[in-house]
Image (cartoon, rainbow, N blue to C red; front, side, top):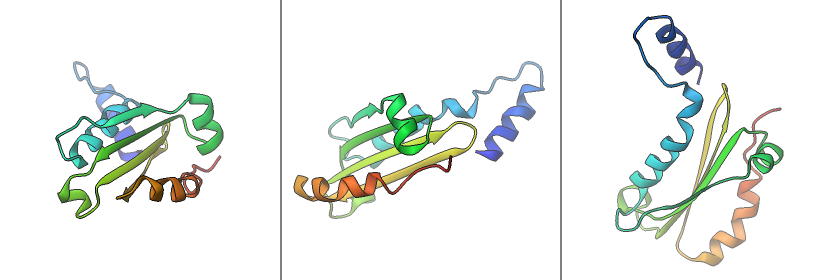
Length: 121
């Protein structure tokens, strides 16, 4: 994020230059990532986390999660990919990808995995 913010500040000083603030990249970036790792047959199921919950659980400003039928290039022999991502404004992003074949596997491990990522307060 540091290099993106520095580039944004340099570009903002030049007249006639348009660049989106790096904090706005999160949602389209996550959606593009999910599309790229999918099997391209079905649209990924993606949703945003509640803003209060993402702040409490991850000390983040934004969060999203998604589920896709995983593409062979990304997931090899796994059938599904569940992913979540969080963003702390002006700090960075964190992504977690969980590959699995059976829903029971995800239900067994997901609660502990979700607790493993958090920005420092």
